Image (cartoon, rainbow, N blue to C red; front, side, top):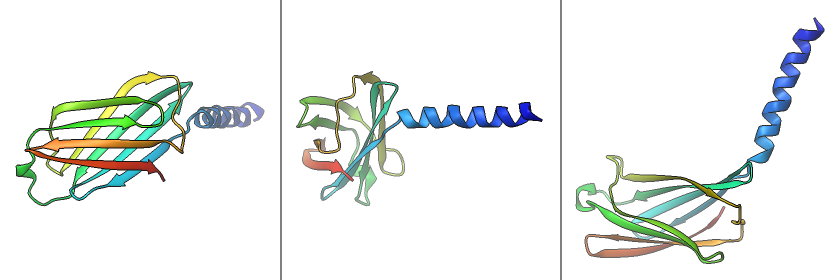
Length: 128
């Protein structure tokens, strides 16, 4: 009976230890035509990001391919994409699997520039 009791406790301890290492920062912002959410995850000493851009308009066909550029104004880091497209729901998601040493803090500010069909907007995003 003791073995059956020890196994579930060991599994719970392992799960808790894994979750304790993860610390997500979520940055949100909006502009006239777009909304953005950037999630920075820190796990086991590495930092990764997930960007979601959502077109707020009704006519998705007018967007076509677009470019975006993301800059952390506090750290001088940046990334972007060219000729990317929205899903049929008007959402673009970029999972950046590259990682680096964690540097982002909840006080950082990001600026996202989006260029499409001769239009351009900037979104300032901050942590929730």
